Image 1 (cartoon, rainbow, N blue to C red):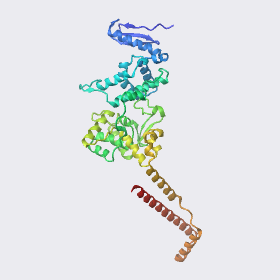
Image 2 (cartoon, helix red, strand yellow):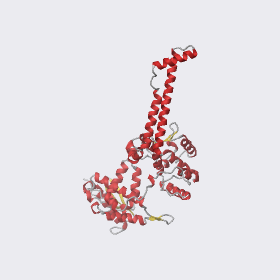
Image 3 (cartoon, rainbow, N blue to C red):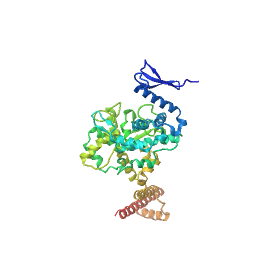
Image 4 (cartoon, rainbow, N blue to C red):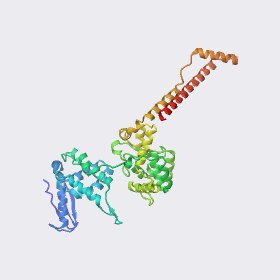
Length: 435
């Protein structure tokens, strides 16, 4: 029978430890100061968390909040969802400190509200002594991650009901206000204006975003090893063992392929020659771009150009999708280009795909092209013989091959005339519709 876990102090390691599941675990580093010292008290709290974690599957709403968050973090790590894990740790670390030692059954919406208010007022100081605090966007992200953690715990049977539901989010005052930046569509000349006053290193980034419609995070992580010259694309392997793993790798088991136009290929080749290792797109200091740094650069450019838009890096992706669909592009092809499923594209952009004027134009063009390629119906034999007789009178001799060639030419003439007539009718209808 295994020994009962207890708190032990090791003088040689200057810390309190416990033996749990055949593994020695550090509880707290520092001097031996039991029973009232800060080091010993920290060790006791950590010991209690470990013991509580071992009974999590039986405790249900008696689980500590920190236990739920820790188990959720382990789940994300085991699933290889490193980006989500990074966001959860960044958002919920302060929540763990604020109410992590409460039992889930003791947790109230008031505790969550107090935590958000505290983080929105002051969460510390920067190296330059600048006040740091959360804005509305960061608060929404933190609540979304907390909701996800509790939702997972509910599905696993660790808790009975998720505290953070739609009604709770509304009570926390986290409704979105106004137009979201990621839903903003760039005006026709906005991109060119910003590129014209940007530094070359930022102009390259904007040009790539505008031309590919990729996720901002994908362009930040582009390296020379991801460039496939033969395919003319950036390829992120879904089963990469190191470096960047794209967003849908684990879910789809497919590579993320960002196809490039000839101009984009030339841009990437130039950057590959300049940076054969490391990130291709770098800021002024030669470091990797982030959403925050790109947003601040866009904000400065908008201010210089006196633009009032709510543009963010993701706005380029939204603009790409909107332009593609409004110009009659295939929703399946768009899904492949953007690295999404058709269902996701339809969910976000279905209203654009159903544009009536565009659909009618596509139909008319399709039918006109079919007629042009069909070769037309064969002309009546009497008409061909009558025309052949006229040609005989004019040229005195004509054989069967000449008659066949004549029939072919007449067929092409007929198709050409029908196509021209259809296009003229189509233009006439469009003129009536537009004005």
